[in-house]
Image (cartoon, rainbow, N blue to C red; front, side):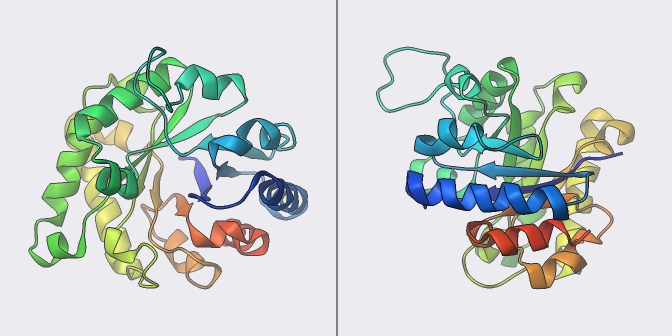
Length: 251
């Protein structure tokens, strides 16, 4: 059975003090309200990782929002996978659309980041998704398939099964627009079909694919009811403990 994953991406928000307060609320509420089979993840800024990992407990896993593709060296300002692991990080977002767009991350760089994350026992949350222009041109499926092929398909089946994929329609991030349940399910099914073309239907059926386009408490239930949607990568709603928990309770 595929893992159900609700991952919050705080992005560049929350000071250490603010982050500790939010994380404490999430941890305390989650213990009583979130179903046992739902995996909660908080992907938080680097400055808060060590402190928040100490209060996360067993119910909430800690994730980073990025990782560098080398193990160590003269890379001023970067953070390695082993550093993340040393402070209790379990997950790491790789290839978020904002990293691709603002920092020019390529599929090859992301493949290297996936490798270094797996080598250090971290679970990659690998992001893929199209712009509105690409969708309107009808090239969105091919575009997403290329991201997956170049970023992940070098992996062995054993390593590939350790990855979680997040589909993020870029046109629905921070815009208030959400893909319809039907649009989201269609893309998730297409992604799973593409995974099967490389690894087999059995392997593809083991991969959790999250929806990452403005999931909120009021639309989560419909999205999470879709056959191929296994969770969410949550942006703005993860900055409010009640909203984040309510999404996790929507299964």
